[in-house]
Length: 93
Image (tube, rainbow, N blue to C red):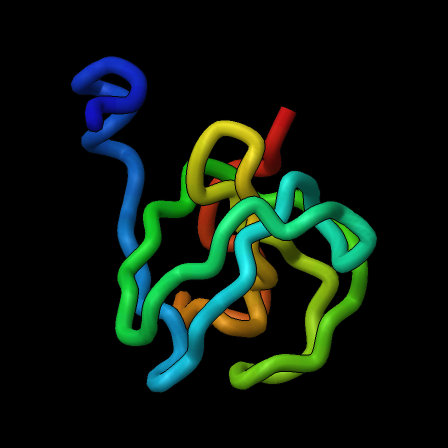
């Protein structure tokens, strides 16, 4: 599946999900949003943008940052190995 233009795709980085975690993907940036699917263990995800949402304590600490991994799909940044406690992508519009 191709998302965006070639220039957009080149700017998107992929990151590993925490080891041995089946990660819930939600329809918005928070735990009150519905689960749209669950990612299998040892998955890599693209981060198109990031936005604040529900604070979650996860594998990589506690944060309110949520990663947009596809159109209308978000995961808590606390389960994605970005190598940073802060934002690594642009804020979602």
